[in-house]
Image (tube, rainbow, N blue to C red):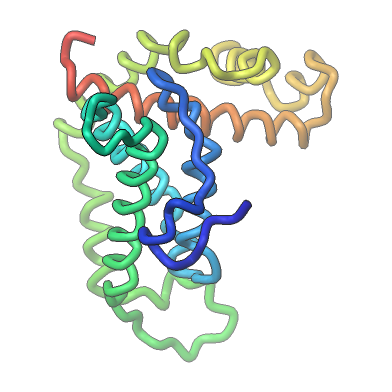
Length: 218
């Protein structure tokens, strides 16, 4: 069943599924919602990752606010879906109303795109990259420490093969060829599983970081 394109007013027709106390169980539903609001629009397609994070933020904010005794009698799924859908369509409208910064036209042939950027944007990007601060380095180190600390929790939804690939690639520093031989799969499959595993870990880390911000004792 596809989500309707009529906006939040049609959300009752959208499929949605979530298990209490397990935000990641809504992953397929969130992807479905994001696909629906970004369909047939190249600009919105490029913002899919942003919309995923926005949807999960709405979901995580909604879960502790749900009251099963509310007079409306709304179920958890209905309540969460309403919050996620409304937030996504609101952000969609904002994204569509935003006018991208124009780029300078270029008459060079075979351009890779770098020379076509607006010169101000290019200079600001160069400055940002060349003036990395000590604070940024400290933040990166803290993030790395957190990643190591919570690694078992972050990888609990990975398949055994995905866990093995991350272990071999990032902890034992094996090459794609070596991993392929060890696991008995093609190099292409190794690459595919690596990407899938990293996406799962990244999403779990995002959710954990949000939860820690709400409760520093986690």
